[in-house]
Structures are given as structure tokens and as C-alpha cells.
Image (cartoon, rainbow, N blue to C red; front, side, top):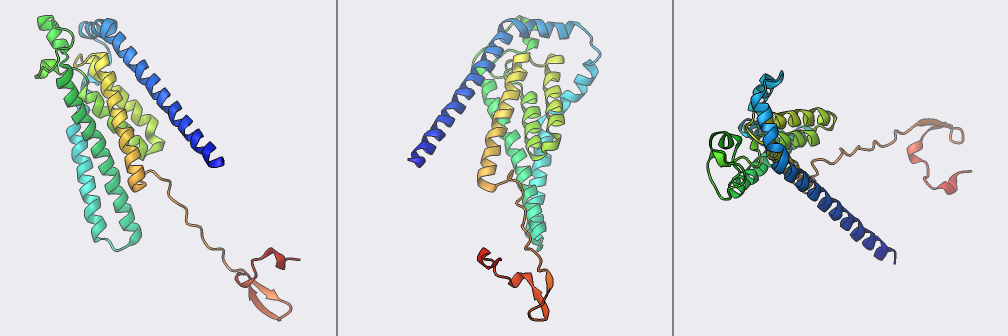
Length: 263
């Protein structure tokens, strides 16, 4: 009976999680629809027509949204961890090298997979960029269109920024807030420099979070990458004491462990 109750509770919990996920996705879809209909174009024209004090900063940090540098560094770290781990004889050193390789591999697949997904969605939706609106009055989704002018949705730079921020945040929980802030600012910079609409940045960031979350669960189940380091319980040291009955020194490690022997 107890096992049936536990299983029933597990099913109810999974259903609740699915309901929360569905509600969250509907809310995000609603926000994006509002942006496409009423917010994207006025906001883009505002940033285009006005010179703001953070324009220079946005133009500088937006360059870091290119995924090539993140992929190159993480791939290099993965290879270094694998090579060093094979050469080391010390078990602790081998474990550290293994975790370095796993961490870099996690960052690489998170950024790479989300980038591939974004590129596929760009072609699927074929959304016209703001430049197309300014030059030819084209706005909206032109499905299955290739080319730069029809690759606005989702934002690849925002996707890279948030995927990298979440991946590094899972590996370094203490700096997660700072990393997410940096990722959010980089994603927002794409809107400020009018390279993307607001809904493009939101969609790219959401996909970056989703793919990274999926890979985090996979790496945890398969490799235990995010499991807390198990503390090795040290054996209690034997305490030397004087045994008055034997007139010598006895060790507590030889004492009986049963509580029946206690007075």
C-alpha cells in the first residue's frame, strides 16, 4: 500500500511539473506575441533614432555574443583535460582532469546544440530583420527564407550569451547571479544596436536556457558532474587509555561496539 501511495505521489508531482512547464511556455509565448504585435517595431525605432549613453557599451559587448570563442575555449579545455587525465598517475589529479573535461564538454554541447537549434529555427521562421523594415518595409515572418535579412528570429547572439551564462552558472553557483546579469546585458545589447527585435532576444535566451538545462540533467545522470563532492568519512582515531584492570594501555578501537556492554 505504501509503495502504491509513493508511486501515485510521484505521478502527481510529475503532472504538476508538466502543468507548470505548460503554463510557463504559454506565458512566454504570450509575451512574445505581444512584442511582435505592439512592442518590437516601436522599440527598434526608438533605439535607432535616439543616441543613448549606453550605446557604445552595447556595441562593445555585443561582439562577445559570437559563439566561436566560447566553443573554441571549451573544446580546448575538454581536450586538455582528456590528455592530462590519461598521463597522470595520481588518482586525485586524474579526477580533477576528468571533471575539467566534463565541465568543458558540458559548456561546449550546451552552446553548440542551442546554436544549431537556433539556426534551424531561423530558416523555419524567416523573420525579416529591422534593416529589411527600414529599407524595404518588410516586417514579419517569411517562412523558409534564407539569407541575413530573414534570419532575425531567434537571436543567435542572445542564445549564446544565455546558454553560456547558465552553463557557467551551473558549474560556478557562487557567480551565477553575475553571470546571468552579464548574459542578460549581452542579449539586450542586440536590441539596443537594432540587430534584433526584443522578441528575437527573448526567444534566443529562452532556447539557451532550455538546452543548457537539458544537458545539465543529462550530464548529472550519466557522469554525476553536478553532484556534491561526497565527504569521505574519516575513521575515528583510536584513543589510548589506561586499563586499570590489566595495568596497561588499551585502545578504544578494540572496545566492543554493542551497547549491551555499557553499564
